[in-house]
Image 1 (cartoon, helix red, strand yellow):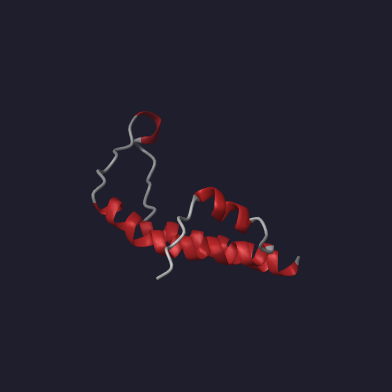
Image 2 (image 1 turned 90 degrees about the vertical axis):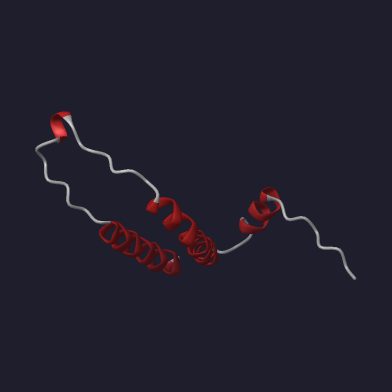
Length: 85
């Protein structure tokens, strides 16, 4: 049986540099999908930070979903831009 070769970050980066811009974006999206559950697990255990000082009277009602939506929009804009190149 063939022995699996160890994959290093340096080897992955070297291969990623050979990809087209659109393929690089798809790679990043794939990695983000893989990391999503890990990040969500960490976010569920974080503590709430209270705004103080100059910020205490400013309403800050941005939800996690709002941030995710903006990230999706940005990713889509980047994908469209790289596809034009």
